Length: 140
Ligand code: ZN
Image (cartoon, rainbow, N blue to C red; front, side, top):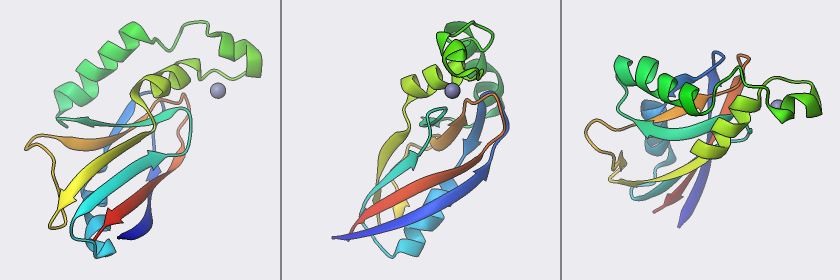
């Protein structure tokens, strides 16, 4: 078994920026030379997350944003704001819920995703960020 690390660099916008990273992951799998295996996609940070989505404007710009805003609104007075004097409490809670890491299978260097399924990075911080997404590609 071989293990290859790679990085995807992203510049994000603040508040619920959902970015399709499927093709970047596909390129990294090809570059790795590994044919069959799994790729772990991880963001080191506590206000970002990795998930999957049918990446179309209604879901990306409305449905997901509205749903998360209903259950974890940005303008709530989070206790975290009093602890550190920052204002990204909603980002931390959203990241806690969605998670910072996901693993996906691939075969013949192709991700085994559904036809309309894309892998997305979720920026939940209240500030734009430079993010490094770590890919750990394992297989043979
Ligand atoms: Zn914070």
